[in-house]
Image 1 (tube, rainbow, N blue to C red):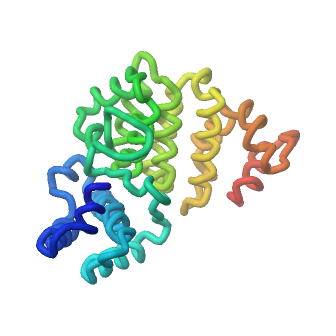
Image 2 (cartoon, rainbow, N blue to C red):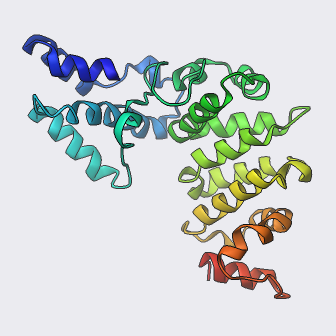
Length: 266
């Protein structure tokens, strides 16, 4: 990504034209082949968006009108998208090299692994783990179907941990989980995770954040028993972290009424 900005700033008119053509063409079909068809356009637009932001921030020369038009289109289609400030905008989903937490695995590396090997990588890699988990979160955001399948395999493995696989995976799936069929699969996978793992503080907080994110789904998830089962399983940790932030003592005898109030389900 840094090279992209440098080429735009100091390259010739011919090289900038090549950049324009490449960005407008988007990633190759091979890059998106493992993304589900329904998520392919969103994943493609996100990859283009990240690169357009890098070029736009160069400033001089200004963004080509064709790229400006494409950036305007993407921002209108995804108003919630925002690029990280400063050097964090150099994070890439096309390249294995990026600024931020060092890692041996970029998003594309994870996407190219068979699912069973991806599970083994997430479970067994300890070196540069923070960078790996950040790439895993981005993978879950751009390829939710693939990430859910990986979590399902993890849930049914001999050791469904460590908890940070679920923590970062749920973080990346927050928006996608508003779709009932995806939420159902995620919750079913979580039910196979042992209580000891679910109640690790970081994972319990991730579950609380996940449930808060899906609370605004339509149709409402209040009729889904799996939602309440996850609430009840994480209750001990939630009492200590999430609920207190909402001034709830959890002394009510009908927990569901409390949950309706806190999450605005009702």
